[in-house]
Image (tube, rainbow, N blue to C red; front, side):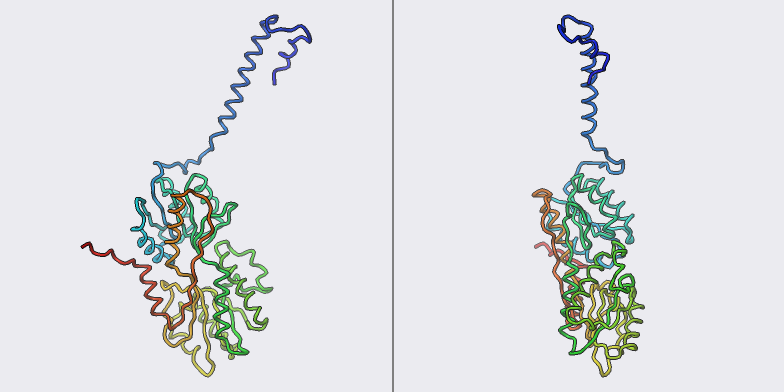
Length: 373
């Protein structure tokens, strides 16, 4: 490690440090310079560089933040209401509930960074775009923030804590409800978003936006479960991505296949259609029924009454309480990974609609505190 010219000053034999004082001085200087350079290099590598927008303005505080996708998202009323309901259960810990004005990944990211800079210790976030969110959430986790994802999962080498439902289980439950009601020899049609309804049984599903990854899982699981009951069970798949397109698809399916017994919708678009607009499709000599997913009452119309409607969805009111409990547990015990929290599924028929409607209202509007004696 020493310069060549210094090494050449060292004789092959008979050399001592006392015999060559000039050489001794030069070696000492070189060794000191080397050690200074070495230590400076090692110590400079010990500090991880931090981005300018990642610095906290204050120290971490005992606060859990619940961040929704947006105030115009169908789930926001439930997320806000159930978060407020669990606030009283947090002893000595602050709860912050917020969301951007509209569903926007960029706006949500800015809000999350702001909350980090203000010192929150844990984040429960309704994920908008799993792929785009990964870097930000991993960065927060590296900086010591407990991260719990809600609704959509985010792929990471070290899995994030998650509170949501199993899309495959939801699809399989939908198929169970269909088969239990389908008459012998009956057929059905499938309503799904346009990017899923493609030739070759979803050959292009790998190109679907990451925000729709859960719907891809649901679609594949539903198709797989239906095939186990017969390859000719599904007569046709209709693209559907709005209430209007759902109404048109239901009407067209009856015109093309007058004998169909059921519609199966991967999303809640048919539930957003006014009941009187589809009433004639359920009446007549042949009884038909609808099985749909995601009964969010913030966007769905009433599906009670005589129309045979079955919906399958998660217990939405469980999501935030489970996420907050998970965050609080990890703050108390340390941030080690635990098994994901799976939200229960619920089947609602037209006969159960009134009860479900009351539950939805209770999630959105937490009960007022009992009066003090």
